[in-house]
Image 1 (cartoon, each protein chain N blue to C red):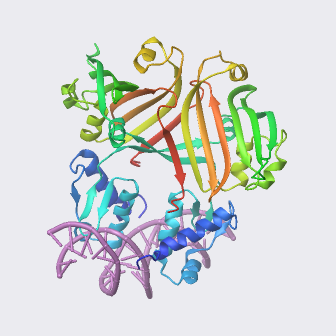
Image 2 (image 1 turned 120 degrees about the vertical axis):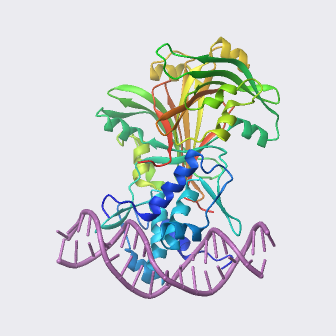
Image 3 (image 1 turned 60 degrees about the horizontal axis):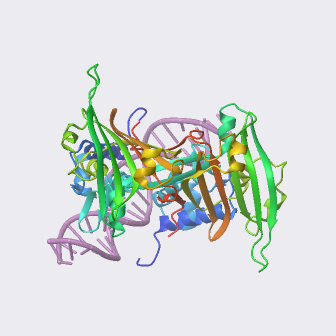
Length: 229
Length: 229
DNA sequence: TAGTGGTCTAGACCACAGC
DNA sequence: CTGTGGTCTAGACCACTAA
């Protein structure tokens, strides 16, 4: 089979091509599974695997008793890979350092969960390219209390030590205030890109982090390809 | 089976729980398919379906002859849904309008592909909330030449009429210049969020669009959940 | 080389939503 | 109701690679 395509993969691509080329357009019905079985001379599970994959990418919707239909695109759904900054810098062959600016533990009076708050700078070859403000829930991650200026980047530590189940990332823009401008070598008022991410483990909040980048400094790219190659 | 969970779904969740809880941590080996068959008393395809799903979400990596292992997370991979602005406004029950500012056709001297360039404003209930600058490749989408102030939002038109195969979205921040500030009701220098998207169909470029939002005006959120419920 | 995943078959029963 | 998808079985052969 080397070089050959799995049957389910061939079916998937054929359908995908027909959708992309416009031979099948939004709302059209695609052949039912038994028809595809006959067309490709394979079993139903094989056909099913192909169609399910297209459902997962959002290209097809299935309704019982009615059939499978080409989905009507509502927007652009794409995957974004948000790399750990330390790993990213190191991968470029540059020297990464996380410079700690402040570290505090905040215990609410009500006896709620203690929070570790961290401010710091991500540096590449000695130049700060991002400011980071982070909160870590110590009841969910008690071991984080040992984190300090000798630990390196708290993001990398968390990624390696604490599994998360859900994350939410939000993008926004803000004007640099004096502190931020000083840290990043900008002028006051310069537009910066802020990436805020919250992370949960089940229902427990793990961490909230705001990373602020100078404009153009960070390549935040989301891609969607219908897996061509 | 109503209310009951499919077996493959149960296996998937069980494994996921073990990974999340830390019972299985990064690099650990998970049971081979035959062991899971025995554990759950089901066939191999059923087990396989569960494991494949976890591979798709990036939680598990499989290596032939070696086994399946809990993946070592390298960053945050998440899905972002970038909605069509017209659909989004309409869904909120507000009145959408695209105000055309300019429309030009640019033909390069060398005889390359002609470009339709559009500037406009996305308005909700009469208030502009985003500026849009767009290029459309007319050789790939000749029918777009008919687009004009009576056509509504070019984005919605393209989404409905032109299938795309690949897209790339980039986030950045910029300071509002005088024009932008006037259009969006901001002060000059205010930080704005820019979303730039390029779209292809095969190797042909379809469109490039820059949408610029006032800070906080747009909820650009990417989520990753291990599909809990 | 032996063990693991990758793929496939030729059936089957069931739930459920449209007709 | 009937047709469609959702799920499952109990096998099988093959490719690849780690031991």
